[in-house]
Length: 204
Image (cartoon, rainbow, N blue to C red; front, side, top):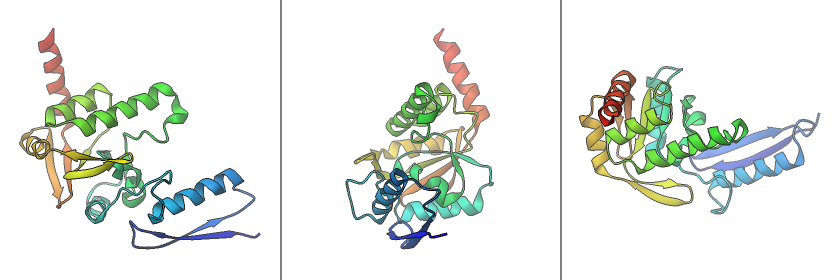
């Protein structure tokens, strides 16, 4: 059987990747989509459908994640690095907008809102409340948060230093890894859910 070999540079890996495609198994639209994303991964087209969001600090953090966390660990990833996270870590990001389109509008919107709100949080209470409010608290083991500027969609966003200071002071999050660009926090979901319940009761 004849196969197509698609070779392209992958900037996040600093190497060359090869995809083997079997025409009988891949349709023309799928070939086009794969080709577009190959160009995106090479960093040669800023208008491609899959921009590259991973830098050297992300790679280091993801290598640590892959070697130092349990194989079934699940993550809430803040920022665009989440698109590469499962491939580079072999771990599951539980809050992902793309890929949930097939599960219905309600599920897609829940993931989308949670992603947006996590990016906007400036303290640990907000992070915890967002995970609980959107029913992700029971699924998350770790929080992956960039330091400073990061890519969000096709624009940049910035994490306030106050967020990391708050996470470090919180009983709900324990920092287990840090480099210049990323902090990884273990999530104490029991403390998180109890705290959120108390806060809700106090409002009544």
